[in-house]
Length: 347
Image (cartoon, rainbow, N blue to C red):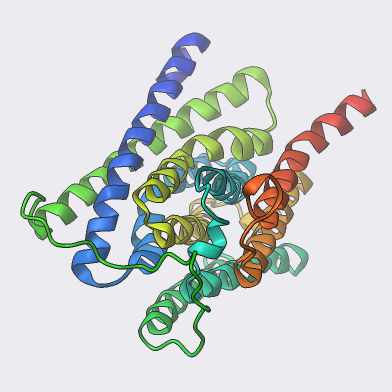
């Protein structure tokens, strides 16, 4: 269906999908904040699990569709590239929050724990790629392990929130997670959840359309599947994270902003499990190339910088943002520019 459309038409549909993701993500942020207050689960947990998974749905559909179509590089790089892009979005949110470094004000042990969990999960695909090519019913054991670790991580995050063994030091700049007063103007809680999940389904449908357009453009212009996945589909399907993060900062829901990014990134690792299940020609990890591994390393570096920044909790840094935010933007910019410079030098 999409292969018969002209390139301007494909790009127009792609742009419309991006707008739909932006509007849906903005709406979901407010709903997630209300759900956090009404359920008492807290902004960090709701942002890290519910909002993170919901805003990642379109990206997961892109990876699954690519894997089913026998495109392992596009499936892998879409999920991994989104992690790098979304972490850079958090640095942009730090620029918006002018009062103090965002990671200082949004101090929350749950987010620090999820950052460490994310680094563990990012290391496992490296282990699978460098290890023997094994599979169970066509699925690598690491893909199954990623799901198990994610579930254990969600339970542990809830326990850390309810019974913390460590607490961040409160300063005059720390913004605590305090539920907003109940309002009679908002929808009933069941309707709030129903609306939230309806938006999730819409995000999934948009993700399928984006995958079809990306595959068509890749074939039509003989583009690198890794570049398309990491810099095109990953960035567009990550727009909900950008919108929800900036909107959460403006609402003063700082833990929700940081938790949404880290939780979304943690959920994005499961794209690899979904893709490995969908890819029927063997292990997904042994079907990818060096370009995909490159973006995995970039995501791991940026996550480490973010986690260290949460622990260091610098109040102010260069240009009024934390040094970790400046470092994350620099790493992401270099990661994009380096392949272009290398390709130009080799031409």
